Length: 125
Image (tube, rainbow, N blue to C red; front, side, top):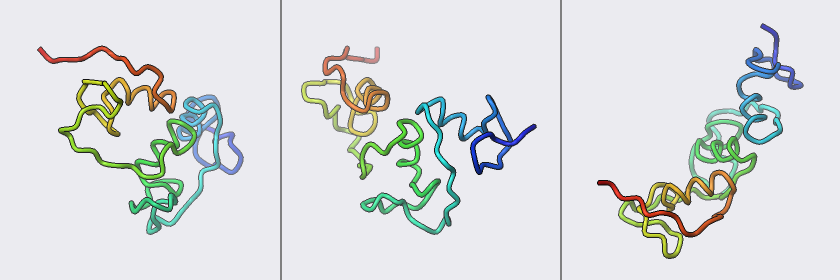
């Protein structure tokens, strides 16, 4: 196997001449970024975030956002009460994550915003 074709990366290539990390970045965001080595004792590089470092200077939640979207969408990751419904006005679906129902959360992850406010109501039988 050969090394990753991204400048400065010494990991073994996985697909299309890129290591697994750079291949996922290219697939998800259309571009690659340099992998930084950071001391694990540091906290998340988002100022308001008290969580500990996970990868590339971010905590786990912020790194996942960066990996998925190519940027951090919100500086503070909030926890929501599981009894609350979706925080989109008029949506009757139950809360799934980030304060949204599954459908609205999917829109946030994919587009970075709410595209459709009206979704079908999902009920278990």
